[in-house]
Length: 421
Image (cartoon, rainbow, N blue to C red; front, top):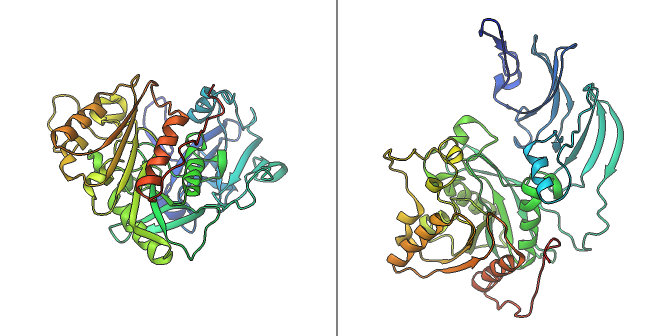
């Protein structure tokens, strides 16, 4: 929430948002501040979770008076609303891959107009020009979907209940283009969220997080013949304090697997074509918790592929100490780390990492697996940071096709990303 302070005395004057008169008594989030108008004393902001009939991950657009706390909805509904802000982390990520978003700003300098793109995982993105009173001035653009395959299957937003029996868990289910309810499909749990970053898609195509990777990779995995489910358990952000701090300081509890397994079992009762005797686990690169699916739940997860495994004790201290609760060097902790849990490994595990990465975490895990006499597979690349080349993606896909789908991958298949030479 936002608070107004007196800069002369340093005293808190009042809470701008989330006060006693606010909807739900403040049990919602201010996700972004877009603009401040000093003349009208109004902020343009994005909030989430004010409407308990829609996903708490969807952001809306509001204006709020900093003196009275009066809040007015400008754009809301059962959609995610993306508003680009100058030099924020999203624009920086797109600039890194040459998309030129750095410096993009969707709010006019006087705050009278802004551009927002609204979508869900199952709708076509639409970009709108609106004014500060919420009037829709112009539909600027709707995404051209003519290039999609004729049998394109839109993902489906889902909601399940966590292992505690009361907390709502939100996610997405992806199906193959040639999907048939009469067939039985192996399942891939695809997520790998962080304590500080959610990897589940909320908008369609590029209106999702992390270069739209969760949306497109989830869709791509499904086309191999899997039902792909992406959801974030407790221990991830964008919800509330209790949700984010669930088992804080315990690496294995990030995006709690108990919540995700409970959700998969609920979905399997609803969709009987999901075969929970064949469940794999995968996620975007860098998640320190992904490997715990195989280690802590060997009877449920049978196959896993882990990209650039990170041990939070050897990562960036501003992240591991602040968001993940891993103690600073020298402090004692009862937290469980992957290298201490390898004795329970039963399924097939593929580790993928780049030799230019700070690889001490993954090699400590490898050393522990060797000492425990556990069979596993590893692909070492010549790349660094989190640059996953198409060859590694092909190997990852082949791993699931062979060990989870039970088929032999095509030996002559070649794939390449557009930016690769």
